[in-house]
Image (cartoon, rainbow, N blue to C red; front, side):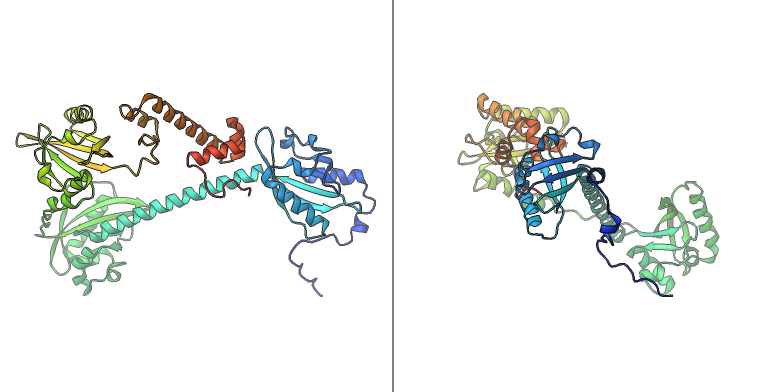
Length: 482
C-alpha cells in the first residue's frame, strides 16, 4: 500500500475553492471575515475606506467607525504612512502579500494593528484584514523585562560564584565539601590537597574528589570521625574543633558545618595541621597607599589645621609644595569657610563620621572645584584628629549652566545650590527638574510609548521630542516607528 506523499512545507491553500466554496454569498463572506479578524477594511482603488468591520470587543471604544470615506493613509500615525503606501503598492503590482504593523492614533493611546492586504475584485478593491497587537506587545514587553531580570540575576550569580571560588582557592586553611550521605569528598581546595595529598601519594584535586573521607583517617580514628560527622548531621553543635589523625600518623583538628544545597545535605570540613600557626598579616604600606591614591586626603588636628596631606590634594588645589599647606587651616581652601567647615565639624562632633558632603574647594588661583568630602574623627592617645577624603565630582554634575552651577539631578541637590546661585536661578532649575520627572513618569506609565506620553502630558509630539533632547533623554532612532 502506497503512502501519500508528505505535505510540502509552507501555506496550504484550498484544493478546489470553486467547488468547496461554491454558493458562498457576500453575507456569509462578510460574517466570516468579521469573525476571523479583529479589523476588516474594504479599500477602493484610490485608497479610500468604503466599509469596515470590527470583530474584537476590545476595540469597541476606538474610533474605527469614523474611518468610512476617509483615506486609509490618514487613519495611521505619521511614522506608519510609508508602510500603508508600500502595502497598497504591493497589492496593485500583484506582489506577494505580507503582514505589516501600523499604529492608529486613538483617545487612549496608539493602537498597533498588523494588516494583510489582498486584491478583492477587478475594480481595484482591496481587503485589509488586521489583528490588534496590544496584548501581544504587552506580553513581548513583559518577556523582554523578564529576560533582562534573568540576565541580571545570572550576572550576580556568576559574580557570587567567582567570589566564592576565589575565597575557596586562596584560603590557607584546608577546606573540604563532603556529601552528608556517602561521606565522599565533592570538592577540595589547594590547601586540602597539600594536607591530604601525601596520604594518597598525590596532591591533585582529582585524586581527592570521590574519596570517602574515613579512608584517609587512621583506623583508630575512623569511628570517632563518623560519630562527629553524624552528630553534626543530626543537628548537634559540637564545641570547637576535634582532634584526629590521618592514615600516615599526622595529627590535625577538624571543624564541621552543616549546610544544604539543592535538597542535598552537605558538610563543610575545615582542617588544620596540629601546631599550625596562622601567619600574621603583613603590615600594609598605608602611607604609600595614601600618597598614591587618586582621591585627595588631608589629616587635620583638633583646631582644623592641616597636619598631613597626599599628592592628590596638591594636584586638586594647585599647590606646588606640601609645605605651603601644612599648618594652614583647612577652611582656607573652602569656597564658604564659615558655613561649610562649621557644618563638617558639627557633624563630626555629633556622629564621629561624615559621608558624601558636597562643597566647593578653592584652588591656589581662585578657581572653584566641586568636591565630595567623607571624613572620620579618631581619638588616639588623647589627641583628636580628623581624616578627610576629598573627591572631585565636577564630571558627575553634568552640563553647567551660565552661572557655572550644574543642573541638579534630585530634589535634595536643590538645597545645595543655596548660597551658590540666586533664588530666581534655583526656581528655574527646580522647574526643569519637575519637568524632567514628569516626562520620566509618563514614559514609564506608557512603557516608553512617546506618542502616548505626549498625549498624557498634553504636549504635541514634536514638543515632547524637543524637551527630550533638551534634557538629554533622547536616544538615536527612538522616534522612528517599528
